[in-house]
Each structure stands twice: as C-alpha cells, then as structure tokens.
Amino acid sequence: MARTMARFSRTETPHTDWCTRDHRCGVTLHQAPDIIADGPLGGRAVITRVRAADVDYAEIRIRVPLSRTEDTARRQLGLALHLCRELLAAVAAIRPAALHGRAADRPALGRRAA
Ligand SMILES: [Zn+2]
Image (cartoon, rainbow, N blue to C red; front, side):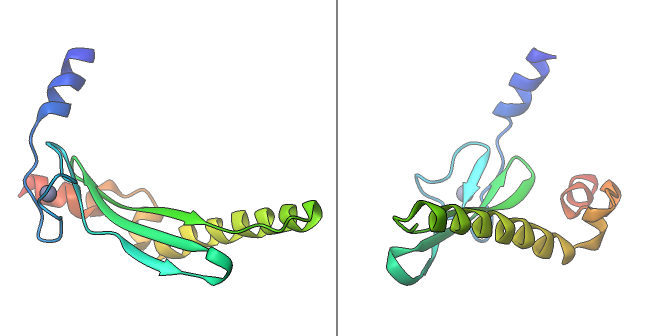
C-alpha cells in the first residue's frame, strides 16, 4: 500500500490553463495567482485555486480582526465559524451531484476515463 501511494504521488500532472506555471507549481500541484479581497479594519481574504493530483479546490486564507473585548471576540469567532459553514454549503450547492456523492458525475473522474 505504501509503495503504491509513493508511486502515485510522483506521477507528474500537466500545467493547467489557469495555473501560474512558475515556482508555485510542483510535480503534482498547480496553483493559480492569489485573488485578494480586503475588508475593514485590516481584514483580508486570499483565495487560491489549486489542483492537487486530479482534484481542484479553492484554498482560502482569511484574516479576521477580532475585538479586544473577550466576549465580543468570542461572538466574532462564532459568527466567522457559522459563515464558513454557510460558505462551504453554498459553494457545494452549485454542484448538486457532489452533495449526493455520485462519483461518476465528478468532472475529474470523467476526464480520467476519457
Ligand atoms: Zn502548473
């Protein structure tokens, strides 16, 4: 099993139409340029499209300034968690087949079969 995984991880994947084709890409990992959304009080979200092996995903790093008042900071953390869950559900809802686990409908598998 371990030998199979090691061989799999070394299988080179080609650059995409959207990746940077520079040091940000690796043998099996490709990345688009960062997309940055600035918010109030120094808040910032950075979204990067990534392909790892044959799986595409959005990597999102968000810096959310918190209140110095502990109760408010905890409420802000709770709201951030709630909105992250809503974000994940909303994005997944665009591809309904993914919600039902129908692997045959996944574009990556379709490409591999072609
Ligand atoms: Zn690339």
